[in-house]
Image (cartoon, rainbow, N blue to C red):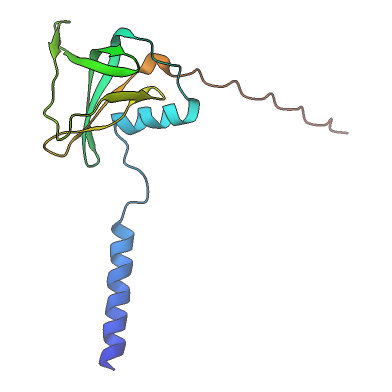
Length: 144
């Protein structure tokens, strides 16, 4: 009888934990952009200075997004700047666990890992391909 109660208790506990586990991807400024780039794709990012980027820093499901500018050379980000409210820019040089090149793939940079386990990315919104035109629906047959 004790085994039945133990099994039933485990079953209830499992059901309660499953019900509390979110089944959807968390929605934040980074994941919204990431989803759009996955759907549409992106144009190639040209070398030079880009003043229309979004710099994101994520920890778990939370994300902070800032406008900024970056310098790109050979498909790699060489410098980052965050835009201040007065329109000027400040150099952004996060402390990283590993010194790896910040390559750009499909309009978003690869993630860099900060010393506090934050993930840092740069998004290039202007490279997002336009939404595809939908198909025209056929008319309904006439009603007799």
